[in-house]
Image 1 (tube, helix red, strand yellow):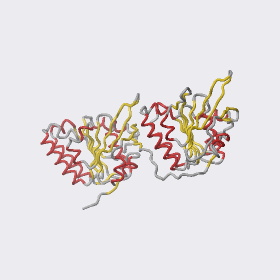
Image 2: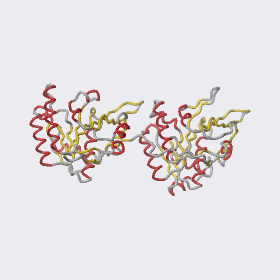
Image 3: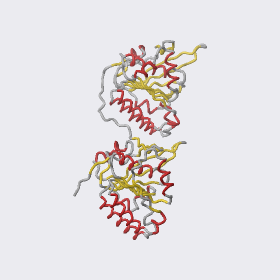
Image 4: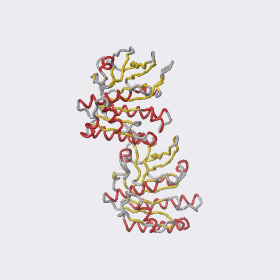
Amino acid sequence: MDELRDIPCGINNLDDILGGFKTPSTILIAGTAGVGKTTMALQMLSNAAKQGEKTLYIPLTTEAPDKLKKFLSTFEYFDESVQIHEINRPVAEKDPLTTLIDMGNVIASANPDRVVIDPITPLGFGFVEQEKRRFIYTFDSMVQEWNSLVVLTGELLINEIHNSVISHLADGIIYLSREDVGYRTNNYLQVLKMRGVDQKVRSRYISRKYRCGLTSEGITVYPHLKSIKDIVFSDNKIKSGTDGLDKMLNGGMMENSTMLVAGGSGTGKTIFGLQFINIGLLDNEPCIIVTFEERPEQLIIEANQFGFDLAKYIDSGLLKIIYSEPDNVCPSEHAMRIKRYVESMGVKRVFFDGIVNLEITLPDPLQIRGYLHSLTDYLKSNSITSVFTTEFVSNDKDTIINPDASFIMDSVVILKQVQSENKLRRYTYILKSRGTKYDNGIREYSITDDGFIL
């Protein structure tokens, strides 16, 4: 008997989660209307065809062949070498046995490496339950003879899957869904079942839900950011860009650590972060700035006012500014962008300006905490020192807007400004700093033409 072979899924980033599919096998892609089942199935076929596989698409449809081809042409990824055999859906529902024979003949003739039947659920639709089960078992016997990766789409709710006989016969089940989160609608992917996968890999994904991007270019799955290397703790100190703060920190920031700078509007959080990046650039350290509130052009102009020539380092490839509009951020996709530049540039410093903006797309504080925890662990595992900023409400009980962030970060610096004798005065203090001695006094600082001065 031939052994199972590993083949790529054909979906962006899905191989990173699953490690690919096994063939021959049967995969069920389930979900309700409009969640991307057909898009995913066609994308799998098209990418396989581009790699030289023989592919066959069998749609059960009411569309005329010309209209179907026009529909398929709207997908930018669709490969014209995919063989198509349309089956009239009403006919298939009325006479599923004849349809089954038709499918078998077409597949025997084409001998595809990968075949999609889209959808499978109309077959046997009119049968009573016992007859439907018998019919599906007959279908499964045919599938076993095809020696192909067979992808089925099914119009099923998640609570219907386990009662469907198709789910018991499938080697793998992928469930696609759409949910309203705040004022956004997000697409998700879950792997409910996947035979032949290493148990350690299976335990990582089987209980997780992954965000998806769904466009005319196809589906992109966004894996959760994870550290692939152990975090190396170091007692080395590096310059923060502010000499006075380095003295308070007993020689500087801990290398490979995270710092949270919390302050109200106008306290100089962004300027502090720009100095942190600038001192690294002067030492030829690759850096990333992540911003939500200021576009790169605006940030470059602001930095120029303090003598920081960011444009020069962007042109040389030493600096990358990642800008996103807060209401268009997909945290998983955003994390993947950071990861891509971290690994391609060999980044040593990251300035993440404004984690409070994550509340727009992650209204659940636990999700924000999870995102920050995975991101900071990833950065530290790549030997990166990072500064994050957030809002701070100054009152009788000084309050950090993102309290969970203060627990995650290695050090926390507070920036305050108060009105005193018709003059605005600014003060800073270190709330905590893990692994190093620090001055816990309150110090006055100013923002001058030379930047943040303590």
